[in-house]
Amino acid sequence: MEPELPPTVCLDGAEIRRQREAKKLTQLYVAKVVGVTTDTISRWENNRYPSVKRENAIRLAEALEASVENILRREPEETAAEAPRPKEKARFPFSPWQVFGLGALLLVLAAGALFFRKGEVPQAGVLAERFLPQYAAPGSLIPVRVRLETEDQVKGFILREHFPAGWKLIEATPPASSLDNEAGTVRWIVKPGEERPLIVYLLKVSSGAELDLDAEFRGEVVANPNGSSAPAQVEGMSLLRTAPYLWADLNGDSVVDDSEMLQASDTVDEMKGVHLDWKLLESIWDAGSYSWVQKKQRFVPVKPPLPESSP
Image: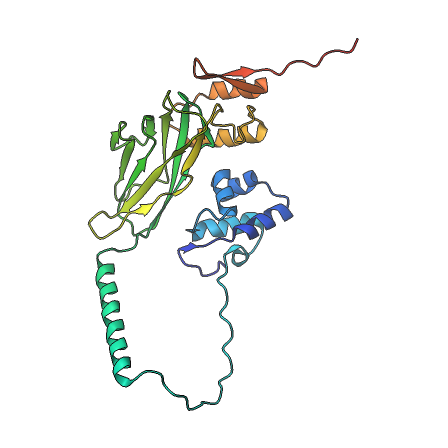
């Protein structure tokens, strides 16, 4: 019998990691069972995702062979109330008029807060998380993914993404509703009843991008944009480093190893509708390493030198 949980719950990342490592489970295995990517599992373990859907939490518990209560974040318990002490007749430091004035002030402040909150309803019902590569080389193409989770009551929403100036959006799935490459702004309108768990796009890094700098991404989601909902910020990764490394190279060692190739394969699968160069990835993986040709702004496979034979 499934436990009674709210629609969204908070995960205990440290406990998730502890249970996974104790049972010798890989992030890839857990991701396949839950139906998400290894990036998402990593974000959950590092408490980078504030809340997740109840169904995902239940599937995660099943993958870890644990009870769902054990992987949820626990709020600190309130300290037990002290036993009542005998009432002492103490002197009250304020006069009745001062108490009356303080009470009136609190009422005014509460009324003001209620008035302003009516004009700004906290965003609810849409969770958006962005996934970026660790590195981007000048002139190269990089994949960007925005994973979306919506509640049943959400009647359409707008996703707005802001990418670095000078970079250009080449392709997107679904196609963007509006695009301003000069300003680095793209929008998607998701209509009521349209299921859209993932929005992906391909960016071409500016050929003049300076190396060893952080490039920033921002985004927001507006649900039911009728003037009653405030935008919610897109969670997840917001920075990547401009460096001479391929997007699939997670640690910047000029090698795409087996683990990185598996994650790159997941990314390519999710980037359907845009054209990532899978053949280049395979050739780099087969070669064992790669280098970045700065003048041509392209990556080339490099085979490590053969060991010298002994005389």
